[in-house]
Image (cartoon, rainbow, N blue to C red; front, side):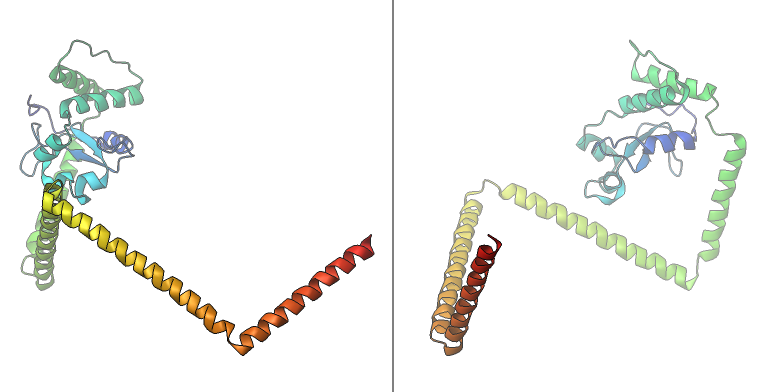
Length: 259
């Protein structure tokens, strides 16, 4: 089902509301709203309608190992088995109910029909962006483009670009290496030699721990023996005994006096 026929609606209110919902992956409070391009009205340098968004945590949007912008939108949707159109319907319906207190019955309707109906309600409520806002947005885009043209050739700008490319490359390599390591460790599970090596490592670790414990005990006992023969140690022990005895006697006397 394609959703290319719709306008590229802009609704800050809807996006703000969507960010307050729970992440479709983790179930925790979302941090951003991602515009779904796959099968919607998005295109090259053209953001899809704000109504074709899903709430995500940053770790599933950009920063995590399996983030949407790391593994790609199509892979992400397959990986987490998301029914995107059902999600569009769910959030549009909940938003309309929340915002306008309208109860909507969508029984016996396809996803396409439901989305069309819900967007129609929102358009009627005049949530679509006004031409003035569009004009402002295009003016902003133009100014950004002009700025880029001005910066081209600037020494610091070019250096920053190169540095960014290097950082991005390094990040991609790290992600690939991590993924590779995870794949290797997963594939080794159940392998006869790998399991034997693991068992051997465990036994070696246990031996080492036992030796360390034994050495610690020996050191402790040797310390006690050396102290036993020490003149000052014996004197201090004797002195402590005397003080303890004096203290006990005083306590007894105090108890008798109180009686």
